[in-house]
Image 1: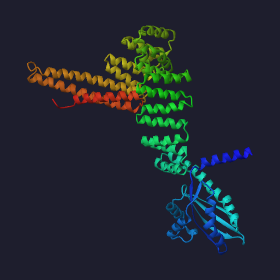
Image 2 (image 1 turned 180 degrees about the vertical axis):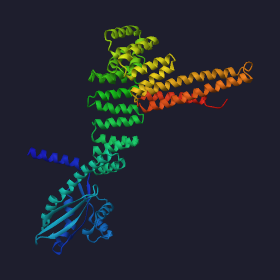
Image 3 (image 1 turned 90 degrees about the horizontal axis):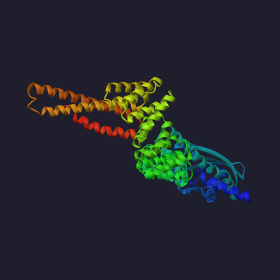
Image 4 (image 1 turned 135 degrees about the horizontal axis):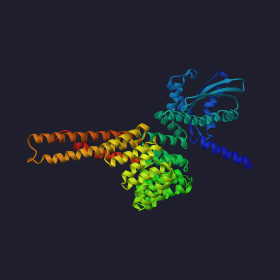
Length: 529
């Protein structure tokens, strides 16, 4: 008995999942031969309405309304009706399913029914046939057993078909068709998690973030502990710069799943908000899950560095620097931490010994060069980088480090030569173009300072008049034009940098530099003097 009860409960649960909403069914007409008229009239007047009343998941539309729409169509024989005709009548009746067919006598007491079942959602027709008896109760029992399950199965099948169709449209980036399909899906099944999730994704892709959030929240009402939905909900909040809500959505994931990546994302959001304590806690939670999670050590070190906790930042930055030896930014931050805490000289001695003990250790060379740069020991930095170039000649980072030192030394020709060498090795690196932008900005600014000097000199009319004044104006205008050309070149390289990076710190730097360049270009444009 218990097994029967459990089976019935499972059946009810499955049914509620597959068909969450009532399907509206319209029965248009059943044509019949003369011997079947009585059965047809009984079906249309009593049997169908009696049978449908016994089910909550299907609803029979008023037969009079269906008859009226059929008559208005002008179709006297549904055998000649096309799918378009049936669909038009179904739309007018507001039906989900439309049924019509034929009844023919097989004997004086048995009658064959052929029913066509049309789905308004999938535009497909299925056919079923069965035999009914002349007696009312037997007819109704047969309809219950033979026709009703077909309608119910059609509803479940429609949900699956609509989901598949919608996902195909989504995969092919036909988002408008996908959206229309998923809307049909959730109208048919208001508890369909996938329908709401994909509608949220489509709105996110179309940058309709508020609407995407509404759909994600509807999906979460159905499945509150869904990592994917909460993750994308967070992304929508981030796109709206609702950072606290974005972090809150991710924190809900940590309540039911242990994920180092989620804690890293939470930490990054709090770091963006400059909530240092929350960021530190999140990064430490990630490290607690995975003690070798280099990305979390890097993020923790950087948030401590940015808030000037230099001593505390050293340990995570050291771990990150070992994991990412070619990350110049990390090496520079670590060197600065050593410098700020009075540990740089000790670090330099350690790096020098490592180079002696491990002459093939490229990271040791890089770290030593970075430490020399931090202490403005540029000649030493050049020496060690040139040594590294011998053993690591195909590493573009080496040439970028050399370019950086030459910029400080104002040897812009050698700085550009090394930057171009880095591009020759790997044209995808954004840093090479950023270095070139910096070189041209510095050259341009030196020209601009010379222009300002000439401007000031020109004001002294006791010295500069006549031919001498003309010569000075010519020199002034020449350096002004050269300054402007270099600022324009710097902006072009910034654009090339932007094409090759999506790091928020890089984009922020590019935007700030553009503001400065805009002012400098305005100050050095031709004319106006």
